[in-house]
Length: 442
Image 1: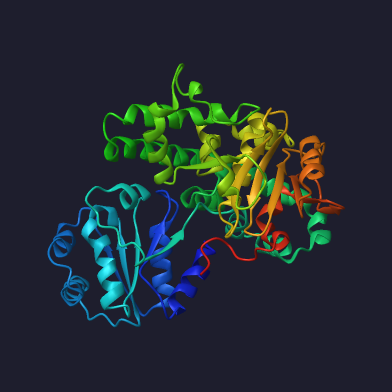
Image 2: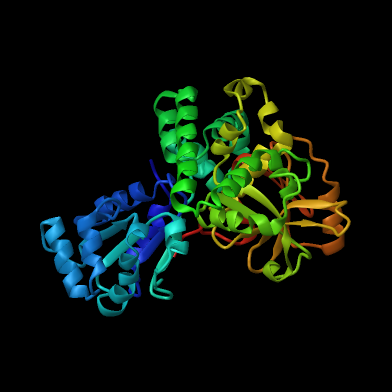
């Protein structure tokens, strides 16, 4: 299984000003696999330390954080000397040893020759009480579930992905149905590595659903294990409300769907908890399409998506039979799966921050408004080939954006002010927005 994040890790290794690296992402997105795969491919030796149920290593870091002492302890643990230039040191489940996280500051300042990568749940990294976080002394890499491009590679369709990356839509259009079929599979399977592996090995959709159900159960167990007990019921209710939230025509998050009469302040911590764990994507409304969009962010209005489209289809009980029913899959939940798919791809693109836009009367809406750093690009999502775009046209006439994009099952086409970009090619959006690199590149 190929992950594009390997390219970012290779660039990190070659940097002269390299700092210890923390890989952030939800559980089960493949952080441990990625670190070990990178170590095996790019280094002569790897020292892997998981702090989960590892009393010996937790005790090593519980005393003073002198780097030479720590390295000696790591060498004793590994059973060999550590050559700084040819050894990758991996700290996994680092949230279980907050002092190990603190030690990264000392490695950066006193022994920058060591190559260190860490991973752990976002909860542990962001919220662990008593942790002295090494601000400014570490770098970060965001890891998400497999993108659709990575999914095609895993499914043995690398040539199809290559056509899109080249922008060869005249050839790609000839194989349009194959792209759409792959997209259907992705809507069902999603990008969680274990589910993708099961699908690519035997095409057993039942096994895929079992794996997704186990992942969802593990997330709910994390609620009880890591969150304050008083917050757990609200976290669960908010989490379980997401499919119903996305099934609405207007996908703005409504607290009343979590519990009748619920108010924002009652669920602020639950929402922050899910965001910090990387389990949800929170997309705010932008009041105006002016740069930077962050300055025009409406903190009270947002959409909430899951980390993975396959997990959403599992939570919603989507039948595998829908994969066979023409293009009906793309209309499920009033296009909820399609918007979930799109935001999931956007999150893997570097230098693009997604918002959405509505006018003050909520009579016009742009599904996503993208801040690329030098432009605010409206992106309208269509679940099928219905290309009526009243809101997008009105937005373009009023604000004259440099580029407007509509993504649907229709073929690639430029027509004046509008770019039609197929849903299966949304990962190539940086080629047209001026952003060339995937998120996480250094």
